[in-house]
Image 1 (cartoon, rainbow, N blue to C red):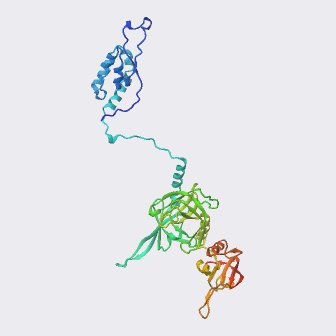
Image 2: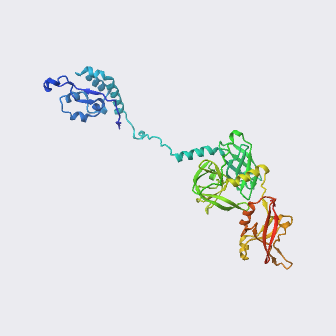
Image 3: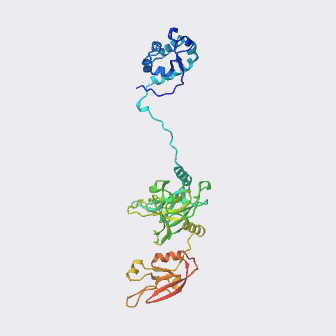
Length: 450
């Protein structure tokens, strides 16, 4: 159907022929009549014309037909001609160009057919809020620093006996420096025969393992890529984090590259166990930002875009995000990466013992760490710590039970690891043990983990 739009036309006024002299007082013979009507409104609003009961109404009815949408070009010319021939010819001619423009617009609007499917409403573009712009800019600036890691394993076909290289897992990582070092989780690369790293521009590079720390679930890879494609992530600090501050996780969950999730820091000082060795990882960051399989190894950023942790684990019975994710703090990661890049391995002090599970010690009714084995050439063996063994009759003789180290109480294996993490290779520690019914103090010199 024909649609008439609400248009604003330039307003031109039409004065009608003066009424007979006898209808006006003698002192008003020089005035023009006060019946002034806008030209476009005069054409479009025939109802208004019908309400005018002045002598000029018949003159107007002759000029304008009531069925405006059906006006033809010939009739429009006829209207213009009548206007030119009206008594106020000079006044009409002075505004003729405005009348012609108004008529052309009226004709185009009144006669064009518009389908319902083609009619639409144009709305102005919504402006982003300040916090939205911050998130958009953070994702745009840090996405080139996040990489996609594919873990490849060698498999042999059971029928053809062909050796194939198939993906056995994937994860995320980020560019640490301009030398091509990529940081990720150790469990992302565990068991891989080959590794491939995909950068933000979808270029793929073969990666080699520089080093890894199984105890802290951190690994460093190396790729040979042009420097202009390597954009390191800005490294921040995890010392002054606060519960409630915003965090952003970027990764590749379920193989979907460069996905952003947001949340807050839900807790600090958490403790999780390494997936490889079971050794506790201390001061872990807890967040409610969605972390799913494939996010492992990706960066956790603060609102300024600085790295504050590595996304490493989630607490979920189903395996999907349940709003409880964990990230290794960047201060822990920095010290590990520096050693891996420089030496290719982690030099961590150890006592050189193997101890019993905590549940076994609890069943004995004692508190501490029960020494199961102490290698004779290890730090504990050299210092004289006694392992658990059996006598000639097969009876179990309990070894030493470590109760304190440097005066700090040791209730379980986690406590022992925490104390050793604060020590260095070569440090001498005083170990208090329960040997039978007696307490003994043994001085042990810590050595590097072999």
